[in-house]
Length: 319
Ligand SMILES: Cc1cc2nc3c(=O)[nH]c(=O)nc-3n(C[C@H](O)[C@H](O)[C@H](O)COP(=O)(O)OP(=O)(O)OC[C@H]3O[C@@H](n4cnc5c(N)ncnc54)[C@H](O)[C@@H]3O)c2cc1C
Image (tube, rainbow, N blue to C red; front, top):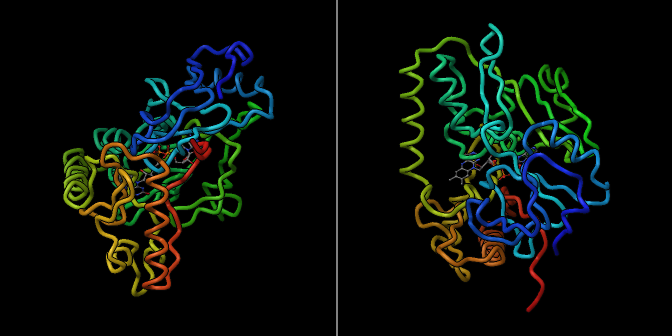
């Protein structure tokens, strides 16, 4: 389905009808958005949402490193925050905090803070997403999660109202947002537009940059980062810190699923909690392979794995 773009509110950014989304995902698979909106800035986004009839669904994508967009595409408007404005990062005030827009890559923020001599954000270099996606998924690695560094979240809700979460999240009993291991209950009608992040104060830039290089080398050694993938397919069944913690990859390996295939989708040989698109995989191949892995793990170990990768959109219509 596609929109008559003239029926949608005017924008200063780009609005594209029937826009293929595969190029916007790490898997390079999946269908098209009825309409794709690339807002010029926060005012453009807010004005568009305020004028867009509420019955039209809106979905936000980051850099697509944690999603399977189904082959039937996504209904309504997909918003993607990309371009120079959405990637801006700066040091805010004299208290060593960093302000970044939600389209900034986690890696760019880690590098920026290293160059600025501010410690505590190097872990972000291990996550290939954007900051908006990091909040939604409570992304983390090397013992730290985005929730540990959040001071403030700014966003725009579905009606175009600007919202800001400070205090509730920063001081944080975290009740409304429920940040847990790779999960949040952050309101689904809010598009995150910028964040204020806490650092751990002064650090030596060369040391911080070396830390980032080490994280990246470790990743390249253990993960298929050059493949079309989406990172960990399933959450580990026990959160970090649990005694005798079970890993999803070990359960998958024990179930004999390493290198298992469905169509063009394959369980990575390098890290078997990663699915890869070997070339021509459809989203249906990837999802079916994931379900096959879940079934085999359940059968062999009794553990029902939880999808960490988000599956969004419509199934393809049968041919
Ligand atoms: C090779 C590889 C390694 C990975 N390693 C890790 C890891 O170590 N740790 C980890 O946590 N993850 C990891 N991931 C998964 C992924 O990078 C993270 O989940 C990341 O935070 C997703 O960000 P994204 O911008 O790609 O979001 P997307 O995948 O585009 O979207 C994910 C979710 O966030 C929502 N979202 C995106 N932007 C916004 C916004 N502005 N406002 C509101 N909601 C938004 C989307 O609607 C969607 O629900 C890895 C992925 C890959 C490919």
